[in-house]
Image: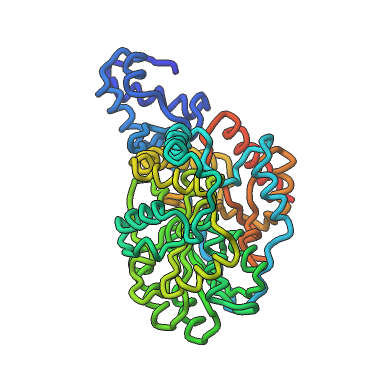
Amino acid sequence: MAFSPDSRRFLYEKIADSISDAIDSGSIHYGEKLPSLRKMSSRFRCSVSVIMQAYEQLERLGKACSIERSGFYATCPRNGQAPEPEAETYTLKREDAKPVSIIGRIVEASNDTTILPLGAGIPDNGLLPLRSLRQSINRVMRGRPGILREYSNEAGSAALRTRIARKMLDRGVNVPADEILITNGCIEALSLALQVCTGVGDPVAIESPVFLGTLQLLNELGRKVVPIPTSARDGMDLESLETVLKKGEAKAVVTTAIFQNPLGFLQPEEKRKKMAEMAHKYTVPLIEDDIYSDSSFNHEVFPPIKSFDTRGNVLYCASVSKTLGPGMRIGWLMGGRFHSRCRTLKTALSLGGSPLLQEGLADFLSMGSYTRHIRRLQTAMAGQARETKQLLLGALPPGTAISDPRGGYYFWVELPGKIDSLQLFETALKEGIGIVPGQAFSSGDRHKNCIRVSYGSPVTRATREGIEKLGSVIEKAIRM
């Protein structure tokens, strides 16, 4: 960064101009973290307070933004803003829960280390608490050397269920440990809930777009779906949902109220409360997938729909897959008034998960390690989201709309023009870039011009180059 003295201006203004020029010239990339206050004060031979003034000046100019406990980041010329995608409107009707045919290729790409994982929603290995988890598991093995020869109780570890019950109390959910089932991840919890509440051919109200794993599960179970228009700002359209429930056109509802995949919205508390009330009013089971609630950027704790459930109509599903990694394979189900049937089905289908991992997680929770890890993870994810969004805004064409999540792992990107995101997925893959096409989140041919982009990995040079390349691929697709 060149620095030209000018006696007629304050020092912080000159420093801000110097940094601004570096951003405009590309010496500092959009989304890149700016040097620390101390490092910059040494470089410019001034006090830390002067650098702070310079960074605040850059914020006012829309050239930088600050992230709590992380630092300052360069922003793109659009001031880091973009319109949010609008919810699609369509006729409310029952459909087959048939996912797109390339789901296998999407999963394959997310596991391919040669592909830039812009589609994968998995925490980076460097963000996982491997050492403290190992210590917890080692403690369990020292205390119970024969644990590898044990089968777990069909309900799961009593110690873990007790820890989960205490954890949920902090979010306004008062459910005793003996009404919690430990499952093999969140998908098994969802599967148990759906099988207990619905039968083959029954219609289930879902968000649109919806998590592709939910769509796959519903298809495999032989259920129909009733897609409900859903906004990236505040979630499912409750007027449309109530219309469906009034007519008796859904036997159950599946929803994610907090940082939904793929839209990333946080449903307002009054809407969460309203959904619990509707489940009671129409005597319709509501299955809540709450897998992302521990990923709030600002360390906020939000009460789930389950916290407003007074009649046991909400079946609550969650796991640690998005905070400790999918390899843990530990989830849980609070079945409400369906608990007994859920437990019976669970017993019939499996003998339970790994006692070692369950007891290890219970120890990890009891030591306070999970709470400390979550705060670090949330701060890191906030920074990665901010950096990734700035890169997207700088690379994608005008007219692009991007969601503005406060947690979770994903941006929902609505592209201008008539783009087929399935074709875009294939083209990007040839360039070594992994995205997820919008059609993967729909039972019909919806969301064709949308893609999901993840910020689960730290931004690197490869990320910057990959997003620039993705922008070029999209520009070419628009011109075709």
